Image (cartoon, rainbow, N blue to C red; front, side, top):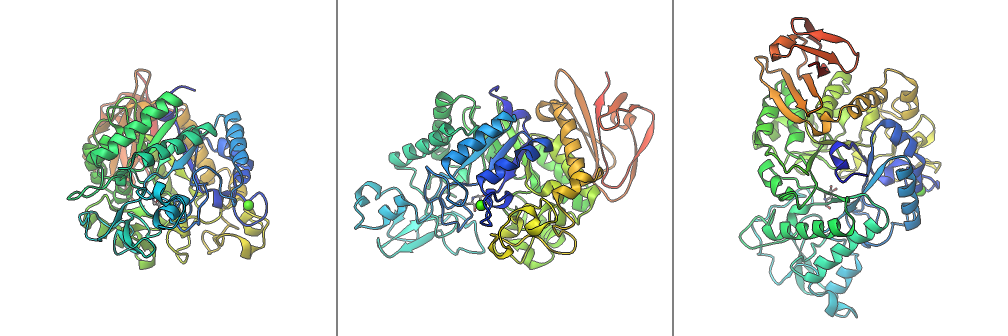
Length: 538
Ligand code: NOJ
Ligand code: CA
């Protein structure tokens, strides 16, 4: 396994609770994921990102960690995890797990000892969290979960002090000024690499360290710690990949790559909403703008790109005007909104419009970086805005049209969340089995697109060159390596447009889907939300 495998990887994000239930308790588990590895491999992805699997009271679906060195009993055992890793590796699949350094659950033994002066280990853990006599410190730090929290401070009656939390009040932030905390989190990373993980997604990296008079985000001290984590992993387990979830403006994301000595990857948060913006406006301008803002990254690093994930579609990295437009356009019902975002899945967002879903994927798979697909989006799963928080996008995977969508044998009322049953997206209509059998299904289209992508490493590693055009609905670019040059043309609008390669100064191409050759002078039509992927014939 080469060290830069992540540069040409395609990731598949799995919420273990939602994927497949192996023991009929109504909750997805690691053995369930194991039973679906052939499906994941055949989809054409090569890396599985598992959302949190460690012990947790599950008030934030596992991002509220209450134990770092075990598997949540709902999901199985450490042995199940190791078996899953082995079974994945046998199929050429890699496994990425989560590290949540910024905070723990308030149920974590570290916090229990820290907040309780009578706890036998209180002295040891006293300074493991960010305690204060006043809630007036760090006033310049924004609140992230604005629908739930009014302050980043929470009063703790037992200790008689406030503790700092950037997310839910029950997720106290760890104190990374404490060398013991720093060491402990290295041990957690080491532990999961020992269990066989190929990489680690680091949750919420911007917020590690607090300093008065700053936004408490992206501080140099935080970067210093991530460099330490990277150096540790490079020495201990060369090839282990670190992926940052730094939801920041493009200029602030660059430091997360360091000089190629911090994170290998970072999610491109500002790009994601602009894909939706460009499609809503039928105009490439938002994409041109964000690519111009996107700095070059070190040669040994890679962006992670995505359309949707388990959270709300975040609108933190757009202007207030753009946010208002996006909310009006994509979340007309206030129930569709959450915090500064939109809690809907890909297919409902794009009105279940197959051409729109495909062109969105065309951008995801060819523009820059390594794409991350969210489970269920490959079959066009729907969401349920009646469910609380972000859960409406975390419902059971729809495998077939049998009871509980084939997700679980449990009685329906034991399943952790109801399966989608609305008229358009119900599991009887939208499911893996039905789509596997239908040659023209979205699932088979995604497989075909991933298959083409796999055969052309320039989609992952090629230099991007955006091509100017007089028609703002058309967004074209080349991806070039010494071996090949690829040309992609996307129609962002609901109208068809005539084009010729001559418009782009290109002589001759081969269509990657049909194998057909096209000459510069030939005019062809790009239908509404159409896309074409070509190899330039030299
Ligand atoms: C980011 C995760 O993606 C989100 O689901 C979680 O609630 C917060 N971090 C807090 O850990
Ligand atoms: Ca189960």
